[in-house]
Image (cartoon, one colour):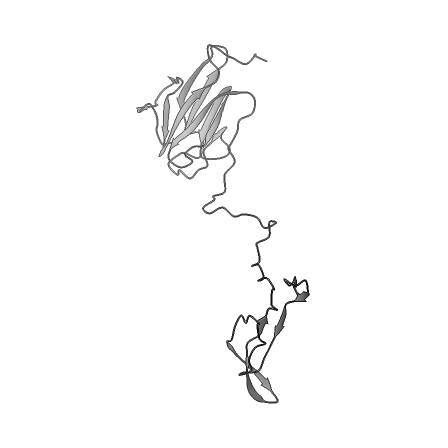
Length: 202
């Protein structure tokens, strides 16, 4: 039971009593509840008052229980994140999803030839739920380290891709800041390698 010190220095403890119906509480006691309760005694239902918390004079009220600090905090609306596919070797540039499923995600463009599609078998994979992107090789995004230039090449899928709203039907140069549209997804291209920087050739 909780123990308290009274104003005159006495130490008292809080007790829980069950008193019969109609009996007055001890003078000065602070009763918390007078709801009825029923107890079966010898086959006869006897009505008793609900347990009454009696606080001795000078006793402080019991503080409400606080949640444990060890319990993890749950964030409302939190959505599990999906790992960003990566390409081996040094990065040559990035594609950032600016419209469509996966908006805000970034994808690495590696040195050499990069096939792009929905499946994880592609070097650049977009597994964000856009079913209009071909599973395998919707298009190629290439970086030529010798001449330090990027290009886009149509893939083997049946669906078209667009570079700045122009259908990609042959090899086309890819400039920094250009947009590529595949299915319902729009990607912005960010070049890292170029005239001012290149990784040393192996």
